[in-house]
Length: 172
Image 1: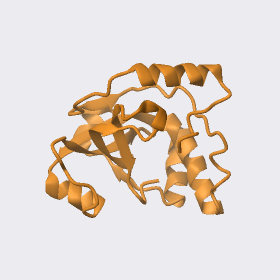
Image 2: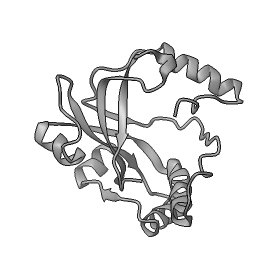
Image 3: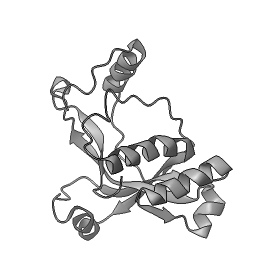
């Protein structure tokens, strides 16, 4: 994990420096919509995956990034956090959020991606009619818990506070 940020790309090195210079947001009581996927860098990400099913899921993740429209952040209480983390994460003084990536399936290629995602066993929940009309996305996928003020795992960051995304088992 500590070597993950090392790249052979000057562009990614600059993005890493920019990321480290930023300040983590304190609250996410909103929808991050219409974000831009800048790039996908695997650094051999597929190598440690032992099974064909895992490689298939990662391929679906890569393809589904084209359908990505944003992230949804829903505040949760102590009981909801305990449910999602099986009691493994205390609430503490900082809030917690049940989050998901939002996706839209409009073109034939995007609709095909949805079907392949289903076949690969990717967890997906349809958006409500209100979400579809108001925000323009069709589904939620790749679920995670969002927490502000968490210490970075990278030793070089010396405990810098970040907004942490903990993707849920079975979500990918």
